[in-house]
Every structure is written in structure tokens, then in C-alpha cells.
Image (tube, rainbow, N blue to C red; front, side, top):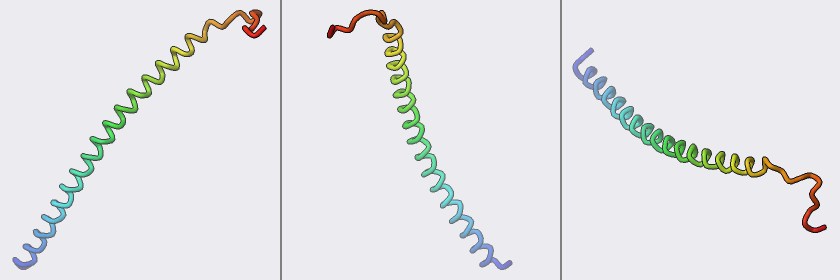
Length: 72
């Protein structure tokens, strides 16, 4: 290979490395955003589960089945 060919090959490798660095930075930003969204959704899920458990507990003691409804 000639010096010009080596220089061209090196230039292309540097372009690829630069492109990969840029792509890696973009992917990292996406991961950070997805992690935040995941954490937010996890908090919301825990809250909903707590609400569901509270609702289930409040309905765990059903009224007397023989009790007449208030409209009687």
C-alpha cells in the first residue's frame, strides 16, 4: 500500500470512529430517558397497587348478606 492509501484508510477509520462515538452518545441519551420513564412508571405502578390493596381491604368485610338495602 502506498502512503496515500494508508492515509485514506486512516481517514475512513477516523470517520467511522467519530460516527460510532456520536451514535454511542445518542444511544446513551435514549437509555437515560428510558430509565427515567421506567422509574416514573414504577412509582405509578406501586401507587396503583397500594390503592388497589386499600380498595380490596375496604371491601374485605362485606355487609351482612341478609341486611336490607337502604331503599327498603
